[in-house]
Amino acid sequence: MAHPAAAGPREDDHVPLDIRSAPAPRYGTAALSDLLPAALAGHGVPGAPATGLGLTSADRTCVFLVDGLGWELLKAHPDEAPFLTSLLGTSLAGTGDPLTAGFPATTATSLASVGTGLPPGAHGLAGYTVAIPGENQLMNQLRWQPWTDPHAWQPYPTVFQLADAAGIETCQVSSPAFEQTPLTRIALSGGTFHGRLTGDERMDLAADRLACADRTLVYTYYSELDGNGHRYGVDSDAWRGQLMMVDRLAQRLAEQLPPRSVLYVTADHGMIDIPAEKRIDFDEDWELAAGVALLGGEARARHVYAVPGAAADVHAVWSEVLGEQMWVATREQAIEAGWFGPHVDERVYERIGDVVAVASDEIAVIASRREPGESSMVGLHGSLAPAEQLVPLLEVRS
Image (cartoon, rainbow, N blue to C red):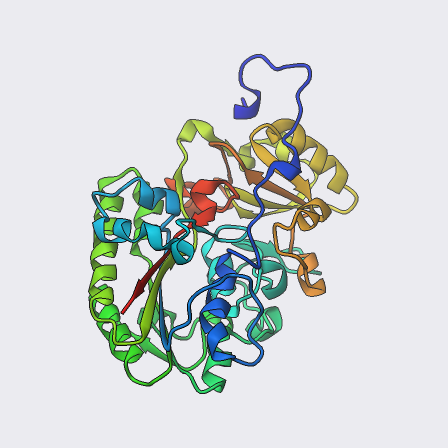
């Protein structure tokens, strides 16, 4: 098959993208993992991760996380989101800058970063699917399949648990379906969980719980924007309709804030539509599949696990075929570049692919047989590219 990177005349001096040109997440200063530690810094919560993200403290803090609300998408749709657009100048305490999601820019990884206050190299949810060390199989960290002991997989306490232990009234307000999931248990638990079906119910209850004590921490979540982006694309009327809903929900919550409180609106990742002609099907490509034991990650951020002894060859082939449109790194290069944070725990090391391939351009590596559902998605995310990596941090104070 013809590769997008190889279509048309090829230059003799083909040079892959320099790994150092990839925009690494701003862990420690302006990443999702810094949000809750920064919000609670003024409370002196014991054991909370250190961060250089400066936020003005408040007695009552609410985080509203909108799945899929990328910074660039929000800026491109002021008519659909007038309230949120009016808050753009409040990002990062008035600097007008976004946060970085962390790598990969995907829901399981980002929610773990938010909830633990740690980068992926520490909490260990390093991709949509990653290899289980010592086993020749992938684990889906969003669906938690196959079953793995959650607290062995992610052993650190959540910031919610630390806040609750410090006497801060703490809760999560989300869909009832998420209450008992392993991801909630190891990333978003601490205090009490309140399940509500509709967005309106969640906003009203979040405001109520925010006012229930002198010091409170409330987290609430909305996923439908991301779902419409995957199904119909971010250039669809269905996606725009959901953005209008998100804008209304954020305003509903903001208008109910009790005294001495702050609301932060953020997201776990952005999204980009990738047309069919820009997709490479790994399951139909013998060249990319040679020497590969497992294909992990997702279409815009691949963990590639080689058969024993083939890692160097796999890296060379992926670099040759895709290196002009993807940052193709060895595991050691990706770690050294800081993609997963300043440090990678030993238990996490082999969850990272022997090769890590990250889209910098309009490209996706799908797997039509291995991942039929994911391969049919219109909107995709995961990479270090700004459309997926940058997320808002919008502030409203009572």
